[in-house]
Length: 113
Image (cartoon, rainbow, N blue to C red; front, side):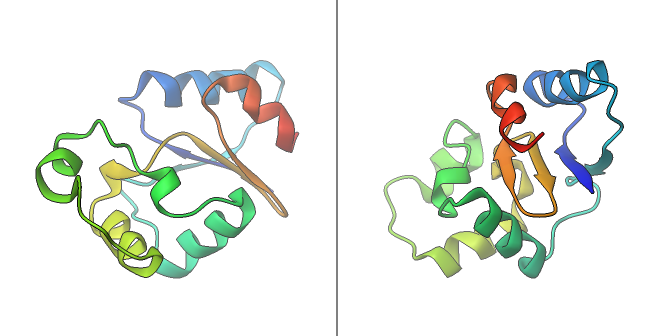
């Protein structure tokens, strides 16, 4: 099982997919903006990443700056915020059966291969 949570409009996400393909791998591509993650799926990914929800927030996004910057939320609240606003999720995320990594830089992907 090899999955990439992907946004085709994102340069870093495209680079991650290309990195996998150049290694001869064809991951399941999950366009998470079109098919949003469920809370359960995101919790599993976070566990595999060994990250907190906030560590996976794109703080440069306009919605973060306008609605969330400087406010305190617990992990459950951040999970809900990210699920409701998937643009906030850092990408790409590469997931295997037992582990996941944030593919920025792309060399991070080697950790799960």
